[in-house]
Image 1 (cartoon, rainbow, N blue to C red):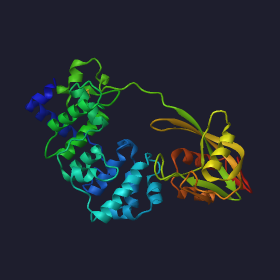
Image 2 (cartoon, protein in one colour; image 1 turned 60 degrees about the horizontal axis):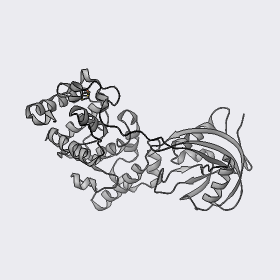
Image 3 (cartoon, rainbow, N blue to C red; image 1 turned 30 degrees about the vertical axis):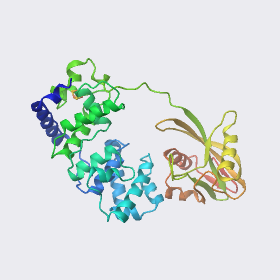
Image 4 (cartoon, protein in one colour; image 1 turned 120 degrees about the horizontal axis):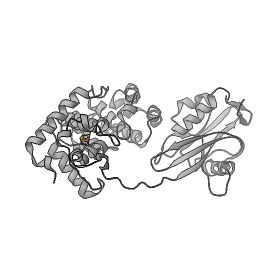
Length: 378
Ligand code: SF4
């Protein structure tokens, strides 16, 4: 029994308290000060997998580089990935770029102003369509992101798995019932902000919660964090990966990952996953032969970097190597280049590869390219 939803006066109070708290406590951000649909769309794509407090600088950097949807549409894929570098989940940047082209070339530069028009764009799902249509165009669509789902499950004491269709339908109905129509943009942002700052995953601040008076989890449970339902965690696999810092004369070899798939379109020190029974050095020689069709010999292990992705983690081992023979080919990569070490900053690299670059440049580990190899330095 969801008591709040049966009581229109209580629903009215819920909206009033929530909106008033949001007006007084919302964090100032440059995208919240903007009513430009382009800014709102970019910020909501960034917020799909990045928290507000982790976005510092990225939004401004992106808008400075691509101030209009036409500017974004006219940029190259490499330019977009370079500006996105560090934010992760690079499919977001690739889809933004595709969507910008469609808006600029097929929709006369107009960002769709309805939920249905938005959800038709690459990279826009239910959450983003609801957020952008409500915040930019005042459409009455409730947002259901992780923060809002947590607030609703606790507040209404919804105990089932939110990923199940029946529970999801219940959450959508609850979101529709609570939505402050005519103020959907502020209401949705207030719900997301409440989940991010008050009704947090581990330590909800029930004593100061603006909607605490009608919350069932607070009134009925010893521990509100028992909701929402959490599926038992599966152990993530961990892989050992070799990455070659391969030199030929004064140049280094970098390879571009295939456009689709994880880290698609980014440049990296080429290499791959270690197989059972092989050393990291053997792994690197094999991977470089399979990926680029060239022969190398390893010189020295340089450093190791740990990195976690959503479904697995890796230890990336950087290994200095010399080019021996063969013309690189795009057997397992989209492109390759021999570059001077100082040119590395011109390419969008995954975070783990960027850490290797930082290691190579640190005091005591200066990169010393010599004919046919990289020396670890002193
Ligand atoms: Fe969340 Fe506590 Fe507020 Fe309920 S009272 S919505 S559990 S912070």
